[in-house]
Length: 98
Picture 1 (tube, rainbow, N blue to C red):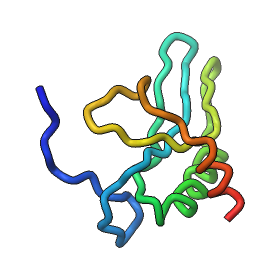
Picture 2 (picture 1 turned 90 degrees about the vertical axis):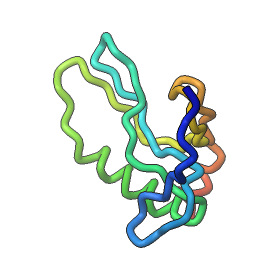
Picture 3 (picture 1 turned 120 degrees about the vertical axis):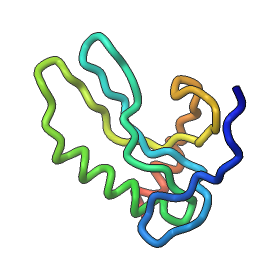
Picture 4 (picture 1 turned 45 degrees about the vertical axis):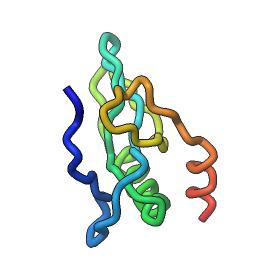
């Protein structure tokens, strides 16, 4: 079934621009692996929202056996699976320097 054509907007407060990136971190409980989503963002809000996600990750308490990587930037792919998302380490580095 194809995805609905509704726009996915940036999560940043007051921003109504379509999101093009997913900020997420790899999470596991030892059995299951998935991406924990911190937000969907546009290019202009990427740096601020990545910093916010990093702060949220630092405050996160994990249960025994859980792992949670640092947040990363992934290209948003409507209708695709998280496993198929392309990670953009170049944008992460650039956003953290800004």
